[in-house]
Length: 462
Image 1 (cartoon, helix red, strand yellow):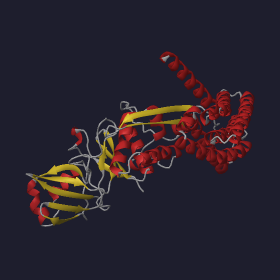
Image 2: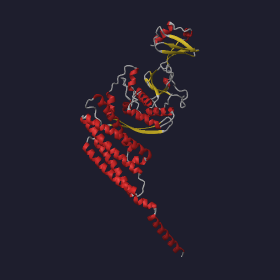
Image 3: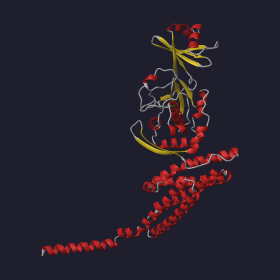
Image 4: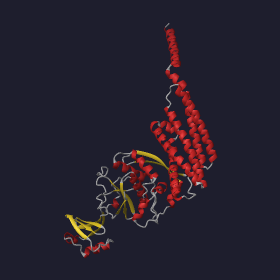
């Protein structure tokens, strides 16, 4: 009897379970979610057709690319039908609607840029500019839609490959705007054509606090070649300023990415410094000095001055007051921060720069406000001749200021007098040194061999 009751009880439980399954809200959701499953598949299909269209455009097969875009539109329409079915059944469809809106806008952008690429290749610049205006307008909307999905629905963004697609398209935005600006300015044709060709760089590194970061950027072939074809001649220090391209759209894109790292300025600056140290390949000095533009350095790597120029370009785009600091056979970046450093004890805060030492016996003349002939001879021997109008003053014991066409400071250090060059004295600010070539140096720390070396500071104008 006991066994029979147990079996009957089990049968009753199974019967009730089956009944609950067929009438429960969960089952109702599962049965109607077939609409969203189908919508999901159509969205993925549409995304794949778009990717094929991009690949065909890269291969210059424009008609076939447009055929793929028509297939993408058909899949998007099917997705809309399934989304509407799900909506009628009171199922939440917001992510699917967002995905469809993104794909629809992306299809329009790819149509436009395909026409731009085809027309610039043929040298039909006037017609290309018309499509560029349309592309840039649609792409601005696409950036907003994609950013919203990445933030709210990361799983959907990954499924539709949104991040990768936007990385691939952003250089086309920069090149299209550049192409248009050139055409309006020069009214000449043909201009260098626009294409999907370029160099994709994925950067992964650990910063000064051991935190892991990563991002991806693509440099177009057009932008890279334009930089290669610019003048690389540097006749004097001021010529180096031409290589600091903080206004470049792609440098600004990189700078904006660092906005999301640290709110503290020192830590943000150190994060940028660690990026340049870790991610940009260091290459040996060349026999003939060759300065690279930041875009070239991102693609090729660079030596000390190239990496320093890239660093200060990003820093300046990010709003920092920066400088380039030149040692014999070495270049570093410099950054002025409002606060004292907390990451490095006794940081290298370089103002003024040490030049050479003089005899302690000259102190008496300096204290009397006299620039002796002997002092002039020492300065001239060290390639810093003083004029007859040079004067010397002293505001504190053991320190003298020499005012001439250039300004110098002389300080008593133990048994000798040290002469310093003060290029920034009027600005009343100093620049913490930033070693960009070697790894693991934080802002304000530098390789030991440079600590007593003569150097020069080139301030990058605001």
